[in-house]
Amino acid sequence: MQADPVTDILGLIDVQPTFMPGGELPVAGGDAIVPVVNLLLRRFPHAFATQDWHTPNHASFASAHPGRQQYDTIERPYGAQVLWPDHAIAGTPNAAIHPDIDQGRIEVIIRKGFRPELDSYSAFFENDRQTPTGLEAWLRQRGFSRLFLCGLATDFCVAWSAEDAARLGFSVTIVTDACRGIGLPTRDGRSTLDEAHDRLADLGVRFIDSSAI
Image 1: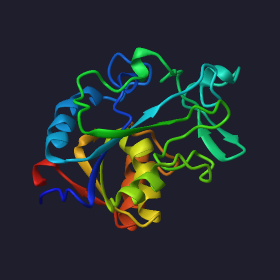
Image 2: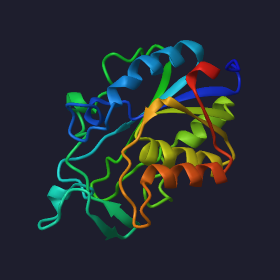
Image 3: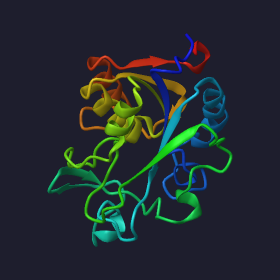
Image 4: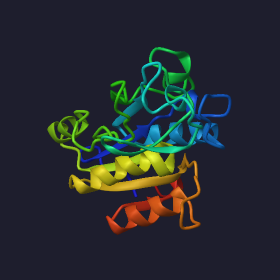
């Protein structure tokens, strides 16, 4: 397939050093997506990007909850919250888009998770699922209807972005070799990657390899 310059846009979800080996919340193999993302950027005339952009002592950090451990889950007013290592601190080099990414076709950058009390995985809504980031309106005003997503991590920020986009009526495709996941174990003996894939497939989200574009 070939990207349609009118309807199609590539979305880079949190392609930041903080989520790569050597970062504060590394996703295994996260740095391996950089050349694939750059290849995609040459194939799509339009792109947007997101950045995790947290305050110090953010409510999603384990360090903000004495007695809790990293990757514990607690209840927040907006639902279950995984407690993460401190990461993506606003203004730090590791919170920037990876320096090797060619940003020439990135037309807008959405920063999320900057509210100290509220985490944000999705490119479209904070984790209360009500507070918008503004991306939906920007995409609709520009006339984009098909989203192709890549980035980190597959089972969290990419998956939540894809889910919200599908529910909002966009056609959504995840470019699998331009993503990497965390794969936390779940209570049923599966992983967050398995759950995300099944949930998204039920919503009609497609999964393809970059070689198909």
